[in-house]
Length: 191
Image (cartoon, rainbow, N blue to C red; front, top):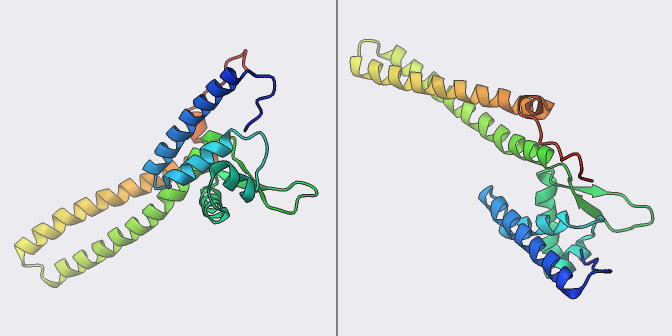
């Protein structure tokens, strides 16, 4: 991260300031998604690395403990935002950022929403069964039938939403989403 050879002090300062701004922004953005600010900053710092890092190197760069780095890396690894890499002759674990932000978002979206879908559809279906059973037990109770009918429509609509969301997740997992919403291509003159 500190490869300032060939730069003036002023140039290095401008690069550092630009990087810090991006790191802060990444940290705040990830905080919105339930990832701690410090883990977001760790991801941002790793984003600017030109090589994989050990937990010790991360801790030194961030001014934090190896334990904190381990927790942050575990979170980022679980979200598929960082992965472990192997380097010949290196005894310590090395980690690097997943360079494909499109895939990182897709993985994050899938991981977060799949759990939500499973939990909510299970609750909705269980509630539907209970409400239908209740309605069958007292078919002459108009007030009960009306409430059950209204709630059943709402629950069925919610289930349809989660089934749609599941199909959306399938497009992320298969990569089909990128046919529907293509990735931005770099300008022809970029490296």
